[in-house]
Every structure is written in C-alpha cells, then in structure tokens.
Length: 440
View (tube, rainbow, N blue to C red):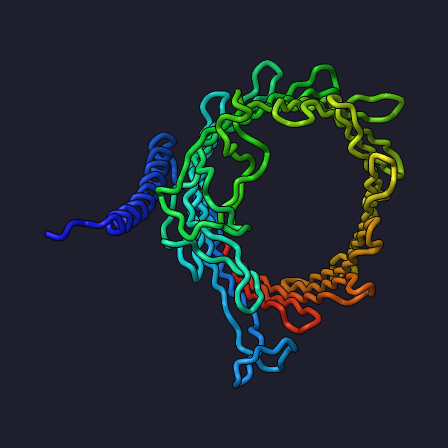
C-alpha cells in the first residue's frame, strides 16, 4: 500500500474542509428553519431576490506579430465575468434568518448566514461567514482582476459573530463579539503567499461594546470600548461587516484596549456642540480629543476640529455648510489654518408631471493640484423605464479632460428588473454591464 505524502494529506484535508463547510452551512440553515417553525407554529415567510450580472471588458487588439496595440480598435474581443447572487430571507414570527450566497466564473465566492433571535428584552444576531480566498491583481491587459488563491474552490470558515442589543434602565447596550481568521486575505489587496489553506488560518477573538445614554434631556453620552478589536470592516469577496479583530492578540504586551467617549446634543447660544475623547494606550498620541458644532438656519454650518492632549498638538479643522438641502460645501483646514482640500456638491430634483428625475454636480479641489475632479450626472424616470448619464472631468497633464461617460438604462417589469449600462473612457469602451434582478 502506497503511503500518503504530505501533499496528499493536505489535498485530503482541503477536500474535507470544503465538504464540512458546505455541510455546516446546510445543517445550520435547516436547524434555524425547523426551530423557528416549531417555536412559532406558523407558516414561514420567504422573500428576497436573485441576481445575475454579466460584465464585459474589451481586450486590446493584438497584431499578427503579437504586438499589443495601445490605441483602441473598432472591433475587439471581450472577456466576460458572470456573477450569480442569491439573497434569501426566512421570517417566522419574530425569528428571522438571512442567507446571502454568490458564485462567479471563479466558483463559489461566499455564503453568509445571519439570524435575529429575540429573547425577552434581548435581541441576538448571530452571523457565520464562509468564503473563498481572493486577491486583487493586474492582468496582462492592465486590467484589475480578482483571482482565487490556490488551492481555490474551497469555502473556508472566516468568522463567527454575534451582536447582542438590549435596553436597560435608560441604557442602550450593543455588544459585538467576534471569532475571526485574522490571516484571511483581503480581496481588495495583493496577497504575497502563493497559497492559502486551512493550515494558514489563525483565529483570534475580539469584542466591541457600545453603551449610550441620555444623561440630561437632549444630551447623549456614548461609550465605545474595543477589546482586541478595531472599527475597521471585515471583508470577503463581495461582502463586508462592521468591526474587525486585531491581528496582534497581545497588543502592547498588555490588555488590548481602546476607548472612545462622545458627548453630543449640548446647546450653547443656539449652537449644537459635540465632544469626543479617544483613549489608546498603544498609540503615540494616547489621548486625542475632537469636537465641533452646528449652527442651524438657512445655512446649516458644521465645524469640527481635532487635537492631541498628550502630547499637545492640533491635527486640523474642517467645516461644512448646506443650503436648502441642495448645495453642500466642505473645506478641510490644516493645523496652521491653511486650506488643504475642498469639495462642492449640488443636487436638484426634477418633476415635469410625466417624468421625474434629478441632476447633480460634484467637484473637488486640493491645495497641491487645485481643481482635481468634476462629475455631472442626471437620472430620469418615466413609468417603468429609467435612464441615466454620468460624466467625469479631471486634470491630466495640467489640462482638463473628459475622463469618463457612463450611460445606463433600466426596465422594470415586476418582479424582474433589467439594467444595461456602459462606461466609456478616453480610449473607448471600458466596461459593459447587464444586470437582471428577480424579486420575490
């Protein structure tokens, strides 16, 4: 009998891991459904949507001598991407479950299971994530792409999370507990190792506790405490969630702890003020305070600033203002009160009786480059048909150029919605998309 090599054992473990992951997903969903139906004695309500997206990206033309042209060609070859997404909700009384799954040309991408379980005054929301490891790359045609990390095709356990919320004596308490694979690849970044298997996983625990209360009428005190966790999102291919576990479980060789206290709703001379204090023993600036205020009226003015208490220093200031809910302007100032950046947004609604829609304009400036970007957009709806057009103008080689034009057309024939869109750049078609959604 041939003795199994290390490679054989690794392959066998990988196959068993994939099978156990899929089996766990199935039995967990089945158990939740049966438990809910038994507890409520009622019919299960099913709702959700199924989506199918087809993306097409043109490949640069190549001559017979294998020279790839930089200039666009009238006729081209496309490469396609196909995404199939299922979003399913099962409701039985107060007990609900949610399933989100996705497949693509690269195979299974994710399976996310969520539930909401009320128990007395408490509400528990457990989650379990399975996903395949992906990384972001730039292919030979200079396009961004996502590839499965070998051995590939396996749904791996990524994280188990549980959110508990309750109101006790005027306190709003929300606690997020997480068990997470802190080594799992970020699909939006490059991944240096050549493979990622179950032997590469490392699971840590973290917790984020949020407590808020109204200390006096109109004034709210909010506390956010991180234990071996941070506010960054956890991401897998096509899905993300609030909160992430710290990779270093022995932060600062001590207890991993961060605290943020925020006091809001303070009224002084007609100005609404807020103050926030962040405590991080591991940071070079362990105590940082931020604050701001809002002046209401025809022009709603928001002013905020940030400064460190140990050591004492000013990080910068910003202010924003809006007029009639149509125009918004935001300016960022440095610690020497010099303008670092500014942005301007305008949006207006259109109603002609037989047609409704909106127009918008956004532009941004920086102190280093001056005007940096301008986008213009419009959206019109007539009955079951909607159309949109967006244009982007940016600076290139110290001159303004039309960067992109994006038309879209959508048809709604309940319960199906079909959308066709395209994005054109200076070199022609950049991407085409056809999307179908079935709502049930």
